[in-house]
Image 1: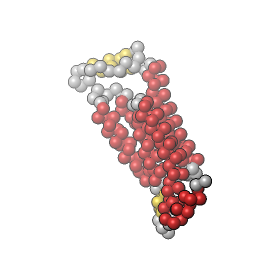
Image 2: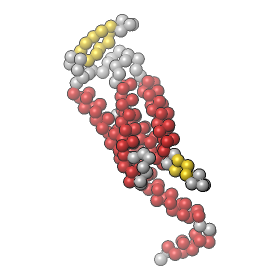
Image 3: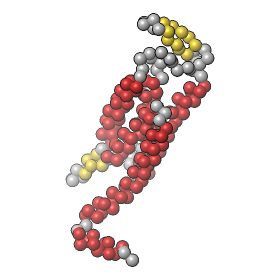
Length: 189
């Protein structure tokens, strides 16, 4: 079994099965830069999505909350992947991500509110944003850079373009067909 090289200084001990387990006295600089870089990317991605929620005056979840969700997801995945345990594999990382997504579902549920006499539901976009942030954080923990860049880009596109588009759709849905036709005629030069 080949283990990841963490430093020049190595300590060796025997596992219960008799195999040599290597441990590091001091992890090398490249490992630290890589690990901290992943944490920074996950936190920054969460903060970008949180900034949009704060800009929209969504006071329930914003810059700090989503930044921390991204950071926590990244830490959880990195803790499993870099634990140095002999039987860590893709299944372990998958189980960590399942736990993250389940736990984040509870945070997202806190963002969903029912208000008014009509019991209108608010906060679903924020709840979905929390979930997206957690998955981006997990991707950062695994250093899957195309998913991170694509995920943040598409999430921002949906958040920025989606709100005005939803307003227009709702506005048109409230109008009768005759009013819709009149508005269409008024818009044409």
